[in-house]
Length: 342
Image: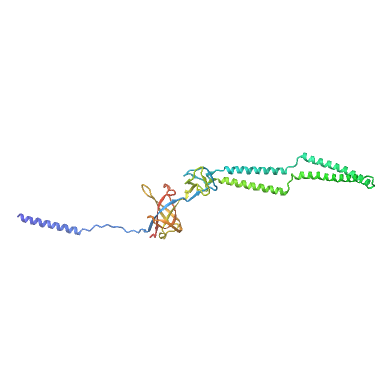
């Protein structure tokens, strides 16, 4: 009897197993389903970029001399025309004083040339003329009275010659006094030639004064444009010259990003195309846009990430920097170029 129950239970278990297997076989298999949608695919590559100032000028003095003062510090923002440094001008100042003194002396000479002679001198000369005229009148009167007497032979020839010579001397003496008065007046009425020479001397001195003042003014080194001071090199007291860089002036209102691209990657790059700029931060990288400004027409030797020399072409980019992101010249960025968009 027990054997019979065992057979029945075994058959029942087998039936259950077969039923479960049949049910499992009939159940559908679960699969993952993805919805197909259109997307843009593109080719891209990334290069290292460096932030550059819109303009960076190494400021140098126009003349040689001792650096007297430095009026700014690194990081100072300065306006166009602001004094950055000054050179010593002691020698030029002394030379300027000497030239101005020479101009004053020349002006004194010009005034004296146009001053009328003193009234006493003129009166003295006129009195001498009057006296000479009176002497001439007396000598002439005696000469004329003795002439007929000499012709009649009533006086000696010596006495006649003495009267004649006295008359001639009196005429000559009067003429000399008159010439002295004319010379006295003409001395204070300069001729055109003397005035021309004096004007030429004055013009030459004024030109030297103007040049010296220009040079003294140029001994103050001023900012050629609005910018930020960087890289101050010499110190006060150093001897500097036109070949000596004093500092660098950066124009930060027009920052640029420069990236060196391999010539084989230039295909598809053109001015105006958009790029992605990535600034590395400690917590999270910041990504922002930019546009290609220009592509250099020639290649130059650069270094690959492995330190190998290879040809590189400079690409300049205008960054669209977010207002809350602080970036300045020298900062490093990643530049992602996207080409062959489909």
